[in-house]
Image (tube, rainbow, N blue to C red):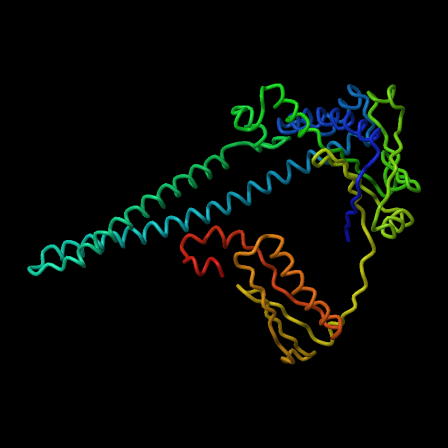
Length: 377
């Protein structure tokens, strides 16, 4: 089981060095991304970067692993987006057909009302208003459909695009004043900073301390620098580190010679360290032979049902979760309390919890054809 442990880097001298390291790595990351997106061979690029920039093989592997991971994620996201938009288009086309049928019926009803000898002015006015609102809805739905079709066409035709620093910040250069920048130079500085906000160091089981280029020894992290910075700072820098939690997991990983990955990330002018490794699987405290506790998520409550080893119902109940109109953190807290209650009961009964695997991405894309009440549910 993979686990990530986080801590803050407080040493100001170390932070200054990390800024330089991240700036150079950010430059190399951008060049490598461009080369790989253009179809460059990773093995050939590795030899080129080692020769040209003096990187060690492991330093290149860290860079390559991060960039190739981003490319793979971007490709998978594009596939998912294409599938979602395709479903949304079908849903929008269905709604448009229904509205067109409705519009024709309203027009026919208007003709009948107009041809009647005794005019029902109230019904005529009501039908005219219904015709107007239906026509407007139809127009809006067609606009949405066109936007979805254009987006689908764009996704299918274009190559994978990744923007280090973020598309929003990149676009800010075209409207500097509205985005709080006095000139292009100020924007460029912010954009370059955002592009160089992280350092990734990949580890391996067969390496000392789980990582060749970044090693945790006692309470100090020894980070191998890029060759271009060795004259200025030496081959390694020592980073004082204090983990407020997870020390036992780290010690076990070091003793069992697990691979340890390190990620340095700058967030709002503060540098954080994320240590990722594998930990021992937690022993199961429940027994399948005793039965199970099934959980079902609903609009305003979580329902649960307990069965015995024969599958017969023993007990059931529900926990109220009134999440409508709540803020994100309130929703998380509400669900957290409900889950805690169920887990504690499951541990007491020594029965595993069973829950359906939920993925609402396709369902959300198909929401156009459903009412507001159904969508909320």
